[in-house]
Image (cartoon, rainbow, N blue to C red):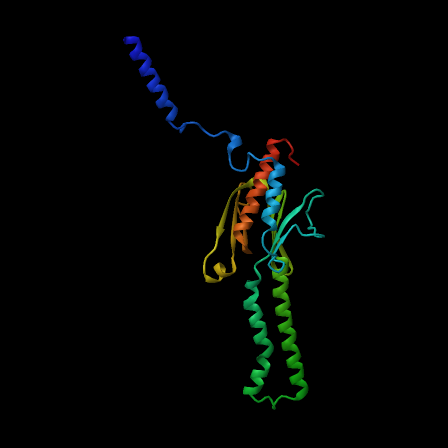
Amino acid sequence: MTSQKRLITLIFYSCNLRTVPDIFIAKSESEKPGLEKPAETLKKELDEILAVGSRFFSAFVPKPRNLRFETQEKKEKIVLLLRRHPVTNVPWILLTIFLIFAPFFIKSLVSLDFIPGNYQLILFLCWYLLTFAFAFERFLTWFFNVNILTDERVIDVNFPTLLYREITETKIDKIQDVNIKTGGYIRSLFNFGDVLIQTAGAIPEICFEDVPDPQRVSQVINQLFYEEEQEKMEGRVK
């Protein structure tokens, strides 16, 4: 009877142990999100992310053609070109329209007969030249302030003025964290915001300001990071 009781007890404990979940088994390195997939699969997923949606009037340009920048390496490929969302141009566009019609309003409210006709013409020409210069400068600032994602680097090109340029960059494998900052009715309505990239390099943070679809930009950066890490594991680092 003693041996039969021992056998029954052993079977009982064996059945109970099989039902206990393996909560103490740590995941291996290959089971981490993104790193279990080969680099080619990650590239296909990246293409799918970039293919969704429109180009937001040249503010969100995936894989731009016939475009190179000054420090681009031979085998380095541009994955995404970003500018501020076009809706951010609305304030200076409205101001420009007001400046265009302002002389007519002033002339209708105030008599300018005390100014000779030739001088009035010169004043009007100077006014519109300054208005054009203001609008052109604002457009160039929007057009040339770009954020570039390549398969190797993250680059932020900023022109505080037309004669001064700031370039901030870091390697993809130096990225530590990516955060998104959105808020307010306008940003939510038009789906744009800031993407904050924390790095382990000399520059602790790179900010992409007012870019379209920040959630998708974050996905692209994370996908590039996973691809870079996978290439390291496979021994195919460039």
